[in-house]
Amino acid sequence: MIRAIDAAAVERALDYPSLIARLRVAFRDGCAAPLRHHHAIPTPDGGTGVMLLKPAWRTGGRIVVKVINIFPENGARGLPSTIGTVLVFDATTGMPVAVVDGTALTVRRTAAASALAADYLARADAATFLMVGTGQLAPALVAAHASVRRYRRVLVWGRDAAKAAAFAARLDAAGVTAAAAPDLEAAVRSADTISCATLATEPLVRGVWLRAGSHLDLVGSFTPAMREADDAAMARARIHVDTRAGALAETGDLIGPIERGVIGREAIVAELAELCAGTVAGRRTAAEITVFKSVGTALEDYAAAELVSERIG
Image (cartoon, rainbow, N blue to C red):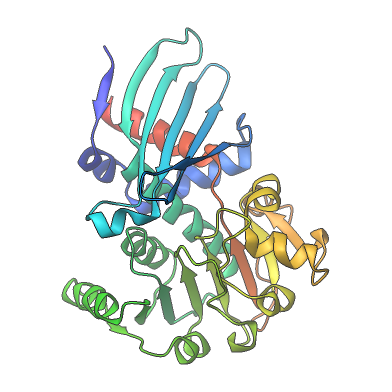
């Protein structure tokens, strides 16, 4: 029987400490995870959606295939911008095992991967966390990062000041000391960790704003035309990625600066797998600036789907 696992079940199964621990092992041990298929889907209103197809498997374990659709205009329709489904098969027989809500799984594993990187890269005494963006990933990123560092306050910045204020109020009501940040520059200059999850096509975070010892977590840019940080941020920082293959093929945060000669490919000092295996050191000094650029990898979907399947049966 094929098990259908809904969003609520995914969220119950994937608490952040457990998921981060599972991702740490998965990045260290690896699995087969080809670079994802990436397809533009025109919409009747003249917009463009994106469909991503992401397979991963481990011999004798599972085959996991995620289909994820990203439609930026969905916010105006009252719908999430990222919608997906995960199919799980037995890797010995090929038989289907489960259909998992891919939207909830993607949100959870994306936030957990950023928090895993921050566990190696953010200062141990980091006190102020800045969330840039107020979309569906923002609450997950705040929660996941808070599971690896004891932040004393959370700042929220968004293009829509009312949404930022409402999100900060929800966090505050849940017991998190939070406030909306009306001035992005001032917020970046005061933050120890900055997490960006936006659909920006022009840089939001300027390298000149980054204080010594800060960690910049870039989640949103998943095409060469998208950017969240400027060239100066990349030039100042020690850069880490989830996978080199994905980052060098897909994100404008790296492709642009490399093409302009601002940085070379060697500026990427480590993949997350190297941090998890201990072959490359994470943060080396209290003063260095670090960047983690996430584009997502099917390995993360595999690890999350495996944990869900184990816990739900």
